Length: 193
Image (cartoon, rainbow, N blue to C red):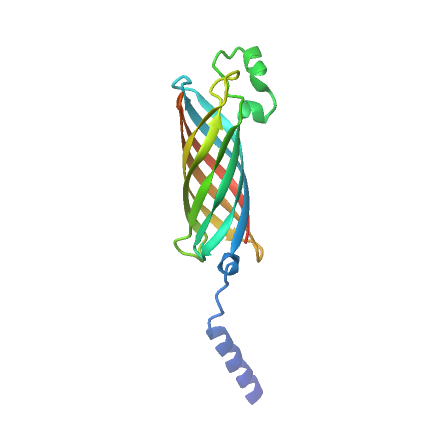
């Protein structure tokens, strides 16, 4: 009976001692690489005021883990209008009777990006950066270069030791010589540390 009591006391003490907190892989890493896929809406001038274009977005991001809660890297985005994403193109828009200009040129973005985790163990993060971008405002027009101011927020969950999965929302505001674009995008993100 005494052995049973000692076993119960030992078991109770082992449960009472808090377990060591799980450490996230970015706490021990010096680099990261991430991919994302998502979509959203784009408002572009000089289109008509009510013209909103859906888009499919692919993203690649890589950089250094400066501190456990601070990442500095570069981001490359490829955004395609929904007509291009499903392979229809401008001809289908014309065949359907649409007389609005259709942006069939992909929009590109590249620039430095800073990601900050205010509470490192939670996975919630804020990000921001500014880079260069290109687009064509009309189907047969030349590509225009500009600047893109990008902000975002998201939540990341550690799935495996070095692999995180998350959700992120980004806002991009693009300035061009002939106009501007305003994007709101949602992503499913994957990151390796």
